[in-house]
Image 1 (cartoon, rainbow, N blue to C red):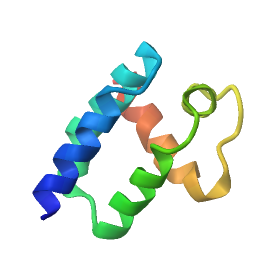
Image 2: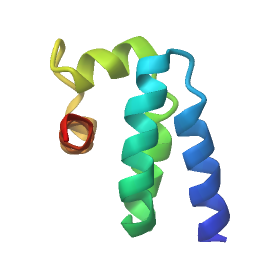
Image 3: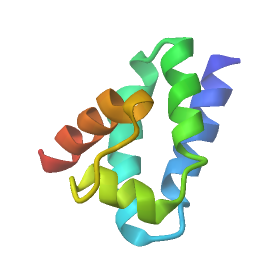
Image 4: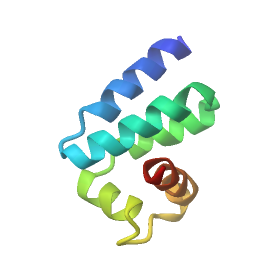
Length: 82
């Protein structure tokens, strides 16, 4: 069941709406989702419901991320910068 969920989340990470977020979230999903706990997957799934423009501003540091996403957004930005 978890494998199916991870595959679904990876697909949602690749098909966002703006190309920048496709690239950023796909890289993050490929590197991190397989090692996430159920609670972390829940948070990531909730994050995928956010608007791409907001996500992009959070990941690039243009706007501070909401507190409940702050740690994950920081992690995403670190993966993207590598």
